[in-house]
Amino acid sequence: MLDSITRVFRTPDLRRKLLITLGVLTIFRLGSFIPAPGVNASNVQACLSMGGSSGGIYDMVNMFSGGALLSVSILALGVMPYITASIMMQLMKVIVPRLQELHANGDQATVTQYTRYLAVGMSALNATTIVTMARTGNLLGSCPLPIVTDQGFMTSLIMVISLVAGSVLVMWMGEKITERGIGNGMSLLIFTSIASGFPTALGTIGRVQGWGVFAAVIAVGLVTITLVVLVEQSQRRIPVVYAKRVVGRKTLGGNTTFLPIKVNMAGVIPVIFASTLLSLPSLIARFFTGNQSGGGPAWAQWVITNLTKGDHPVYMVIYTLFIIGFSFFYVSITFEPKEIAMNMKKYGGFVPGFRPGKPTERLLKYVSDRITTAGALYIGVIALIPLIALVLLNANQNFPFGGSAILIIVGVGLETVKQISSQMEQRSYPALMR
Image 1 (cartoon, rainbow, N blue to C red):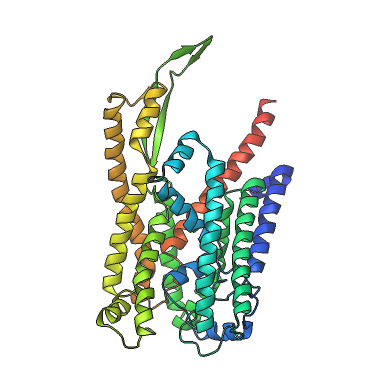
Image 2: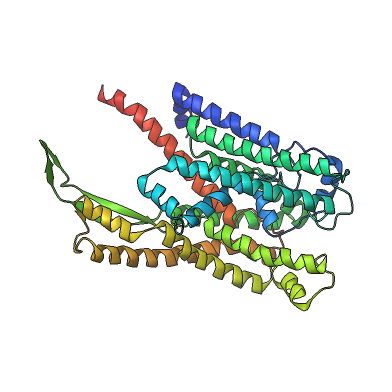
């Protein structure tokens, strides 16, 4: 391990990319501690020490921003607007002819530009919501201390502009890492945000719940990481044979390869979808009740009682069903057996034992459905781990080893290591040839 790290830093190009990546990530983390204009930082810290939180989707946004949201910093929005915009663009690809045309022509640059515009719009919407919740005191639960001391319009406008500018800065950082660093920039920013909360979460569990619970959490974490690594690396390989064909003086094809289908093709997207959708009824119900324990219509009280806390059985069941449903839905719009079968037929490829065209398409659909079933159940189990820990271990809802956190940490870590290894092999290959 130490020898590999030494080899990486001895390679000038890789060393430069690593330093750029680490530099941008450092700036990103420093920005999460700078409060937005008009925010009383001391009152925010006092409210956080009381355990204030709005719950729901804002806990997820806070995790993705590395705690910047509940600290109301200039980078409070983090990468969530860009993630939301990217997901919406993938969904709209199915129903918008213009996006279908761009996808078919491979014009990824235009799609990326549209995603940026949509992300800025989402940033403005989210920033307005966060500033409104900060002014009314609902962002940090029932904390009596004022977060925004000046309730004037100009102060609110400056706060919204600052948060939107911070979100645009985060997008720029992610793109710079992708262009000049190592790995996917947005994924690494999320990785850094989530990993930065692990020491605090574990320290809180050890201090409040005792070191016995702390040891149990570590054991559960190691088992979870092992399971996630095993499944994330698993794939079904469908053999594909390409027939020989002569193009000019060259003979192409005649080789055998395989089509890899990952067990978890949906990634962490179903967890985000399910958490977001489940948070909406709670947010709507609070408009009718005023707070989590106040009066209001019976349906609003039922929603707050059953769909707000993750330790409630109704919440767990609906959460799991949403994850499974969104897994099938997302895979159905991202994995297209018909298009894959047509491309294989176009280039002279076929699956042994199956004719090109419709038979191959039916095979891919059958394999995809079976693997997605296993992948959806796997995501559901991983997402339930922090909720079950909330009941069994009496740990807080920010239990670090579970849900989207571990899926992202392990997935991004594996992908980054693969990219570093592949670049090392590319630089070693000419030397071996000489």
